[in-house]
Image 1 (cartoon, helix red, strand yellow):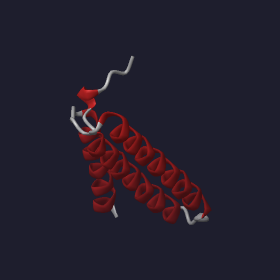
Image 2 (image 1 turned 60 degrees about the horizontal axis):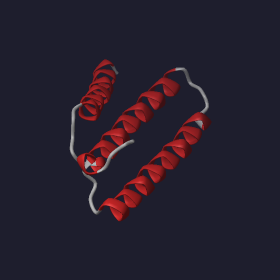
Image 3 (image 1 turned 120 degrees about the vertical axis):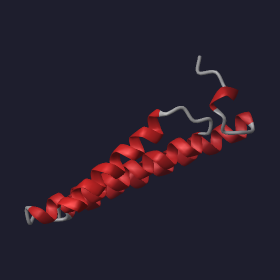
Length: 94
């Protein structure tokens, strides 16, 4: 059980390190966000199993995760349509 918790914490930290480091592509950032959410899902699953609680909260978490993924993909598609690529350097935030 302790090894599983350490693995989940390591997954979360690696996902955060990829997210924080400077990458050129939006797709890599979105994939790191999904990796972070996946590790949080497994952490929540392990916690809810440990306290013997209902798993309904996991369904709510998955619904919000799917909405976040769909929003990220729609931003990616609109960015590619307007700018031609998904480089962060190719568009101005102002």
